[in-house]
Image (cartoon, rainbow, N blue to C red; front, side, top):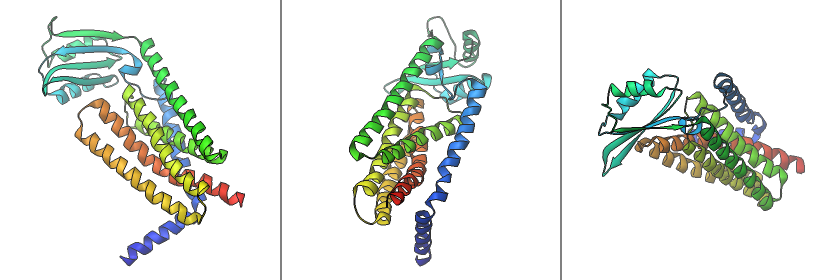
Length: 294
């Protein structure tokens, strides 16, 4: 017990004294994410992987009781490895009554031919809709603008409350890094962004500002010992983030809905990254400012 406590005390002391060195951790993560995003843009023409709802493609609705969705999804992904394919089920009283298949970069005939290998298709039991790339692109731009507005609004509110441009810059830096690094990680994992995924990034801004407000309140608003205030804020912040990560993680494991799973996964990744960007990056900004002000 004493050894553990001694190790934690040494770790806290190192964290407090060597904050400038630790600042390189989020910087390195940022640079690695930039490389991943650049490679994604170079190979796909876009900085983020998008699914059919944001990219355009075809949507096939099938009236069927076929229940082996995983087998169908694996079959289609193997047949079209470079395409974006999403499957959703339509249920009534817990019973599957239909399947919705969304796909991009696939011809309608090729997709139908592959589906027919597992599910019998007739003219009466399926319907095909086409989403133009222009519509998907327009929706993506609108959601991106919404993300930008939320980001700017956060900065304005933060500045009005704290009246400290340095603290506002630190909070914006932390939020931007959260989103940027999370995008890099999801690109690396090959995740195709949906409209629900963009909503997750909007929520991530909210989580980021929560921890930034907590930190800035302790360091900029409250008077007292800087070191004690920092560790008090960190204890509360880590508890909040751990609760969020646990809740999102359980939701990710228990739900079968692909959109909800993507939202939860993005939030889990983002909250873990926020621990680094806030309690290493943001802290370094504020510590540097406070020490220069003395």
